[in-house]
Image (tube, rainbow, N blue to C red; front, side, top):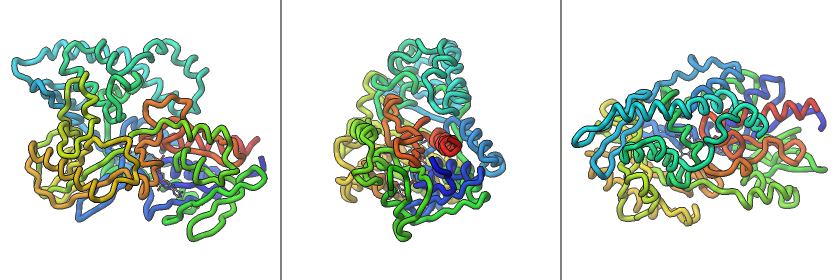
Length: 485
Ligand SMILES: Cc1cc2nc3c(=O)[nH]c(=O)nc-3n(C[C@H](O)[C@H](O)[C@H](O)COP(=O)(O)OP(=O)(O)OC[C@H]3O[C@@H](n4cnc5c(N)ncnc54)[C@H](O)[C@@H]3O)c2cc1C
């Protein structure tokens, strides 16, 4: 490997910005190319008529990992990125009339006819945390901050390994005795796009994280995260090129020679970190003859995450919603129904209201609701035309109107084709790889092509804003290690 002086980064989401920030801090020349006209990717904001909408990520989980990324970049997170805790996290309404609300930390309330045994719930929550909080800490404070290694996981977590078998549903059944409590607990993990029976038990760490560390919103919205991360790259003299789509990574004599960029032609560099998904990097970003067979096989067998449709409403009225996330769900055994599409009706509305925590995201007296109706997963992203999106939007608004008075000032609908074409997500899959994917499906930071590296949500430690940002740090470290060899 010859010396790496100049590194090109494909993508200005949180992973590209973290990678670029670290490399530029270590004295490398960094050029970051972003296809869109702004930074942030799936963690950006869009302002429309005074409403600040999120383009992708809705809240920040695992803030400790993001804090660590800021430390590694020499940035003061608390002054650059003030965070507000979501203290009314989730309300779930169930068919038996039970309404269960997650508040701040372990503050969980159950409203139902005839009352509820809150003492029993408290005991069961305590035993869940006794079992799972040490695992969350192990992952958040250690495993997810280092390159993945089975030997390290076994050495550090051998006590916990027997816990890792089974599904979210089997674990929730073991931990909680009340059917409504079980259904609300499993409902928290439906963001994975899978019913609890199919979701690996480790996803329970999302629920544990919500109850312990909490979820957060940055002041000004999720788009403030990439804005703050970009400080490291800018302060260290890195260059950011917006509206600059990388078309091809050029390989000569088995190693990276440069990058063909829209409007700039060939940019010669010593190395490339791609934060487009691994599936994109090892298909359309390389000439066919340059794709290593091992990566070609990985692309072919990649278990993709679900596609999504998001309907965002800027309301000129306030709505009687008390939680950030809200859902009307079936009982746990029937939660697969939440993913069954019906173009004419949304039977199980799942929606968030960021203005509960951050009213200033809407003009005074207004609010924002985002709803996520289920959609057909086997339909290609390209088939999602405006008409189809609009039809689903009408059904979703109708379903929400049955629950709340909506005075709609602004409406924005983001469908699979938008995620694919405008946010450059492979086949519109929102997390790239499925959250239930085996670790072997993830793409390595160091590719078989000399000088080509990979970061972002299809590499370890995976999807989610904090983890994706961490993957940028791990990829940059891989570049630096390779350079020393
Ligand atoms: C709808 C949705 C909801 C989500 N909800 C949450 C949540 O609540 N909490 C959470 O933690 N996470 C959530 N996530 C996941 C989280 O947003 C992502 O894991 C994270 O933002 C990924 O960061 P990244 O930098 O790896 O990729 P991206 O954000 O996808 O950034 C990659 C960037 O590369 C650019 N790019 C791609 N190809 C090229 C090219 N050829 N040339 C130049 N630029 C290119 C793209 O335009 C993009 O800006 C959500 C994601 C989505 C889509």
